Image (cartoon, rainbow, N blue to C red; front, side):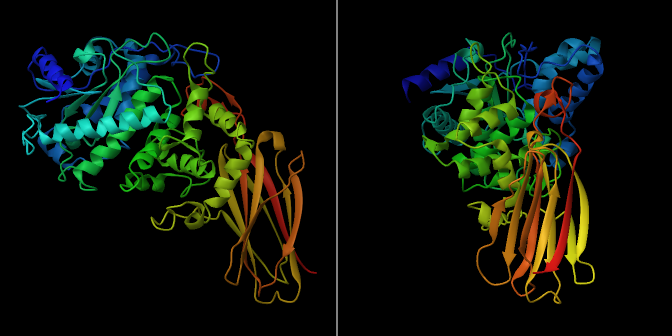
Length: 521
């Protein structure tokens, strides 16, 4: 046994020998800045706090045996950010509600601990106990060995990729190392979480984490126990890293990038593919930066698009996402940009714009099998068409008005009828909001014959207008997609919304007009 591990055992003897309790986090007092979203204002705070407490109760509260047996595990049950929300609102609670919330703010206890570059805490009795099996005879349960090995690999991967190390928590948990507690979370539908028990006097905070104590196939029927441990460790440890940049960062950005990194570190597990059902591959007309349900998890696909478009790596991780987090960094003297601004500036540093990148992403989602490296093999869903214009010699013109939310898209499709042969063309007239509002359009022409589609960005003028004429013969053209994007990123911030900077978009509902006119050339 290593000297570090002997130290861990010694530390464990100093801990109270009780069963692991509900997760803990002390009240956080988020710092504010001119860029990052602030904590909720006092008005209506009690009602928000009650909702936050109810959310944590639903995730981590005591349940009946039957409820624990039938709960469906999914990281879409976001315990990490539910706890963060309750931490920021706890002071609004009184009486029994405050006492119930305080129970969640006590760090779990255990009668065993082992430390290397991280500390793993577990118990040998009660519902949270870890299987004592020790096949290698090293004095540690095999599951604890796995947690240590996997979490160390995750830690080292982030370090070599240039990410900031999670902040030290002093002597909490027995040392300054990051602590991982093993709890029976699966029966509550939770894989794991990270939270903080330090008062977030600044915009950053230390963290500790909790993982399920066995990832039993009875509670987690998808993937093997080790695979579920791998992606949970990657996802949750990244939250601890994020807290060292900005504890108060936009929640969609926290979760989307944490879901993204699972597949970067453990590409063979593919657990995050389940969230594509709640992504812009399925619902391109919904705003990318919304936090709610499992939507924020599904937006990992945007960061996969980014990392495939900008594939340079530091260590084993694409650099572009780290660069965005460095721009979101809220430590003193750092940029402290909110999520979308940080992403936009990271892209701009690569010589392009978020408008161009998002427009290519939205158009690419119409054919994910060729857009993404794993799109065909894993059968990524295809973004649907919003409207179809079928043109014919007798009805050669169709017009549409399309209203788009911010950071969203819609595709119009047209195709010729069999009567349109011998030199037909189609003219596509676009009247979109001004370029300064984030308007973009991409056209994809799919041929009848085998061969690649032709895709190009429409050159809009400053007013958002353009006219494009293309071949439209039935024998040559299968269909034409026109993907319109609203990449408006102007917000009135700190309005208590579920979007970037907690703001209200100034670009929602912008309307574009598109007219298709067929004619014989």
